Image (cartoon, rainbow, N blue to C red):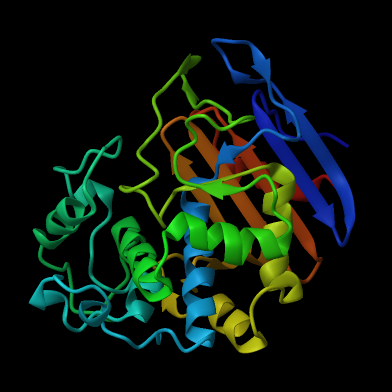
Length: 310
């Protein structure tokens, strides 16, 4: 059995509870020569949106908010042109808000004050009325994370640590800056280290989580085994709410729902500066696939070829 080339990072494939591929390769930090190990934490980039979605769903189960709540109710100071946008619209990328390239004034490396960031989001009129289209929007998930903070009355990273990672046993995972943390991989591009994006504010909720490979494999048990959430919440998270424009693909809450390697799957990729990530669950074969790498040149979707080798 051959596996796709991996110069840096972790590649895992499980079928049921059997680990079929377990590969760790390369350096976590080119400068020091420190190697990647199973304990190395990588930025999972946009897969972080799944944690934001679960945080919102947990609070909805507790009655602290509703998915039909308008964002202007949850975040005072938001502009009136957002009045029709609900948390559901943010979760499904149907709010009409733009993605990072639509906000050239925002520096992903930060730092930025939260209210300043909100003002910059508000400076661009919605691209369409809520629910009238689909446009991938990391800023929408930043708003969701801020909503979680207000509804839970505690910092977003703290909520994830206590209410999401700890109950799942994801001891190697955290949200926010990696500064001063042990076992963190440094992002690389062109063989050189690159500075991290601002994960504490600018990318909060949208791309701010660090995981080990094993932790991200465990994370997929949320939809796979219904861990952490009530069955109705799992069903809502994995439902094909909004067509993305690609054949047979829709977006749920933090998951793409559609074919992968010709099979039914829940999946998401991630792309932060110097990091790539991919995570998928294929329910018919009960396979879970995880890629975490600190090498910008990797095509994360290309690793799905490993599904045809086992």
